Length: 361
Image (cartoon, rainbow, N blue to C red; front, top):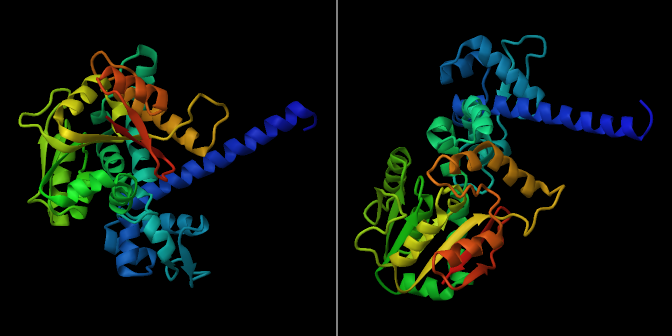
């Protein structure tokens, strides 16, 4: 092919081919995560196809095909049995294990990058219909994969960064949580990882998590028990557009959730009313460009794709929806906060690639 038009088409065709390959390989990784194959290899060491089939409860022929594909893709390491598939052994490198298994390791991507794919796949028929009708697609349609993925996506961030942000960038809040008994509200808490991290960092704090999803809260209770903080971290099904009785929290958190709320202003207004005198409201949401810019960088592309596939449809599933979506720009945050009665919106200077942190006063 010759000429600038043909060259541009060729370049874009190559990009699409690479996208196709990456998507196919991500789907095979999804199978490995959901079937427990990486966990089986990590726990039991290198395996033949027959051994992995035994460990993970797979049909041996499927185990062999998946193992060979993973080795060809450079995800697993194959050794021995060059001419005998039955003797060929496959190993999961430690560097790949930390990425492909669910944990609070900062490099774990199973929740962020793998599990949501299954949820989106399940929701695709509903998404097609919604894009024509204008209706929303509630989280229930995306199923367990999305719940696990979305709930665990920021687990490492809360575990390793949240307390440091408070200590270094908000010393007044840090001292307040350290000085004596304090109450923290985690609004739209999901699986509870933020509240658990706060309780672990501040032994005198009691955390109340609120969410509309009973399944997520069931996970949150299990997570708090496993972390040894269930005596100080509780969870309640509640629509936080209305403040809970007995409010009076030293810190109210809304982490990575406002952009999905159908009515964000009433929730922020309730958060303002939940504070004690001098209490703070912290809002974490997507780090996106100040203004629309195309083409965008990788983070902007990720945030927009997430919005197209989940966050905007989920937001539109509620009544009288603001229709925010993932791309919640700082100017919109300020507009929502001022409408909710706050007078100051300050961006907290933290180093985080995917999120901005705001303090509302």
